[in-house]
Length: 199
Image (cartoon, rainbow, N blue to C red; front, side, top):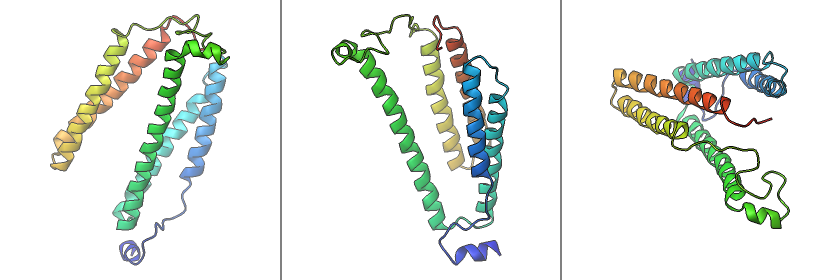
């Protein structure tokens, strides 16, 4: 029934989903929980928010997979899903471009900040007063290598998928996830042992 129904139209007609509302509520709880945690009130609200986000992701992806196998994803819908992913990646590129722009503006042109009266964050020099920079040849280098290696392992998994090599796909994804967890752990250790605080 679903496959016959999907072939007669080009629209993405699926059952109403609770996941956008649950995901938004979980994100709001996570944001409030993070603010409370940053101000020393504990992580009692942050943890349920993160659990809610993780649950929403798993359940929503499960529903999308069920919809795909039920024939709801017509060629037009598949094209629009690809457009959505392209726009998501483009938004991430813009997000990181803004971060790098702000960093390079503050670090390379800190002297010009004095002339423009923009010294409230850096004090007119780089690095700002009270900031002891990380040695780039220690943990940052290790984390960069981990990040580049994870790009290699996910490419390995992708090529295994294209060749219908299930074992290679699984090992590539397991290696990528392990490297991602390791990267996050090294980041947490690095910033947890920084010589300065963020608050």
